[in-house]
Each structure stands twice: as structure tokens, then as C-alpha cells.
Length: 215
Ligand SMILES: *[C@@H]1O[C@H](CO)[C@@H](O)[C@H](O)[C@H]1NC(C)=O
Image 1: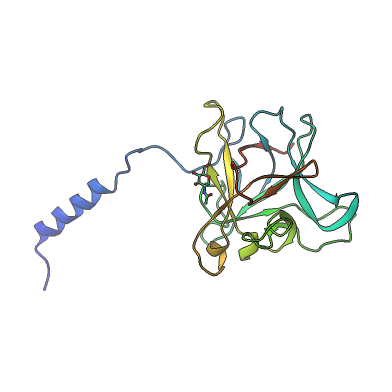
Image 2 (image 1 turned 90 degrees about the vertical axis):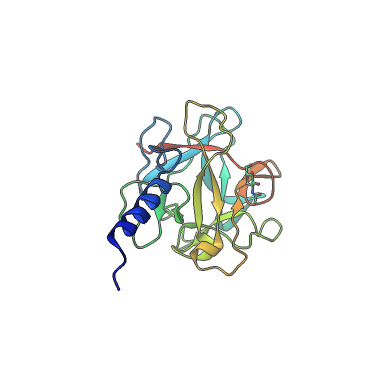
């Protein structure tokens, strides 16, 4: 039996009016420090909004004067340094070929292949165990794409330092890439260990950063 035509029209109208978001016009794109949309799967540096408390994020293959493998993801102590370049790559089938990065989407963060190191094959950021103590909950390389341990997302920073730039924080969301429950994300913050600031999921103020396009 066909529903009366008028009724389906009324139902459609109700849906149409309800689905208009309160902030019509807002989008989920990620913007770099110059206000340009951040590209999916392209090299960027990330660093603090105010580059006075240290420089950009980079890799280090030494910890306590010993060579380590995989590398740790840390903040450069010198504010003049932009840090390394990383590719933020959307994961889902429908989004893989998207031109621009979006907030709150599962992504992998790729450091690129090491230039001279023989240490690792895979270069995606990962967190071995977000519920463990350091060093197991520090961000390292050594992950592969589309794994629970290497599953992150970029989200808007809740209380941005400056209204003039778009700033973000990272979350580690193992469940979103096939991990086991609980369904929760872990805020990525800075964890100080013997003078080195590591990206980590130890509790604390989330690390607020901006994107800067690689030259
Ligand atoms: C993540 O950080 C935000 C902003 O500081 C905070 O509101 C939220 O409670 C934090 N979430 C967790 C799981 O710590």
C-alpha cells in the first residue's frame, strides 16, 4: 500500500528543517597557520601556537644518550626549529582520495622513510599501549597504516590560544581503526622526561598546535 502523497511530503519537510545544523556554513576542514586548507596526505610541520615554549615536533633516535629504535616523537627544544615533516593521511575507503584533511576523521601520521637509518621499515606514529605508563604510552614511529595503535584524529582545540589562527589537538583513537573496546579517545599531550618533551597520552593539558606547510 502506498502512503498518501501529502503525508510523505510533510514527513520530508520535518526532516529537512531538522537537519539544518545550527552553525550552517561551518565546515570540518583543517587549516594551516596561513589560513589555507590542509591537504590530505601531504607534508606538514606541526608546532605550538606561540613558538616561545619550544619549537616544532620532530623525531629523535636517542633517549638518555642511547640510540633507540623506533624513534620517539618529541618537541624540538629550540623555538627557531620548525621540526620534521609529517603526512596526515585519512584512512577510510571513502576518504582516502579526499583532497583536504578534515577534523574528527581517522588518520595515520607518516614520518616518511628514514634517510639513512636501518632501524625501521614502517614510519607511522603509534602508541604501544595508551593505558600503560611511560615509555609505553609515548608516541613513537614503527607503526603501520590503518592499525589500532597508529590510529589518530585531529580535533579543533577547545579553547584556542589565539582567535586569529586555527589550532588543533591530536587524539589517539585505537577503537576507530579496529581496536577492541572501550570506545574512547586519548588526548595527546606533552610529557616531560629528563628534559625532553615527548608526545604522549599521559593526562594533562592537550598539546595545542598549528599546521605549517612544508616548503
Ligand atoms: C581532552 O581534552 C579536553 C580539552 O582539554 C577535555 O575537555 C577532555 O575532557 C579531555 N578528554 C580526556 C579523555 O581526557
